[in-house]
Image (cartoon, each protein chain N blue to C red):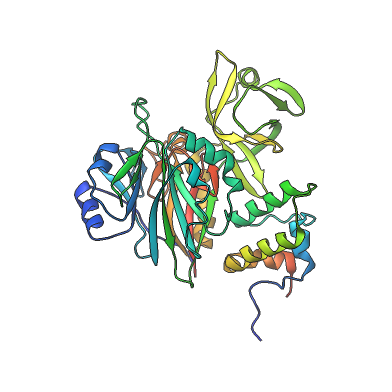
Length: 78
Length: 334
């Protein structure tokens, strides 16, 4: 079976990333800026976790090729 | 494996004209008088006469234009002129998969508006938003920078122009930056409103006049302030210190709820850049565009040094947001 490039959306690490409980420094600029956006929304009522995961997942899918090292660190196996 | 870098070139006006007449899709930088002479076609441009060059020293050149040819990389394109009102929809009018190349006129209302508000633009991260702020000769401060919509053969000192490109589904464009400056942890600055001008601010938690602090500590303002955006080092460069009002003016805004640090001293811009770019060249497959700041051109004396790339300098780099003193590039993944 071929391994998919992006870890499944129901993995808890996605929640940790958007709530910034997991402070991972991505190598990719757009992911860094997106995580910064989540950090700024933290503690405000502006953050919708499901929507944030959708947005991050969509971005991760687009840039999956360049994110493999980051995914390896964050998700280990999928 | 090393990255393939698509070379952009400094060309005479006749060669640039031939490319335009051949239907090529181009971004062109150069002196205003040359850009005015180019024919109608698939190009956008901005005034900037300073160039850094591979295998030779950089220079100010008013006899040639610097041309980036995107024709072979893209699938489709459109060119739009944007005013302050329509600029915020820039990410909505592009293609499903591609990139948007934006040129802004320097130190105009649209430049400030973009810098302060781009983070609220809808679908900002859908496709890379890359580009530059146009400028003028530093010796002839009297002229305003200009943007050019070659498709309509129009120029403007107040409006932006964008080249929106689509890519084949097998390709993805990605913006990355190379920042040679590193933050020094001695002092951090906080402001209480989003602003280009700072008078009083918090420095390490104490309420202090920034102008006076810089004078007292003899801070070298050729180095930028640095803010950490979750791993991305974002620079904000000093524009000037205003003696009369004791204010400090920046080329990009400082935002509230962020901490800005002074930079560590560098021995050599060129050496620091080479150390960082080596990793980039190892990691990337294809780079189709790069630009570097006029402040790095001056700071790194790129008129005497070669950094292994050719590009037009900028009066601000666009990488989703407005950056200062940063080498910016567009990579393609397949």
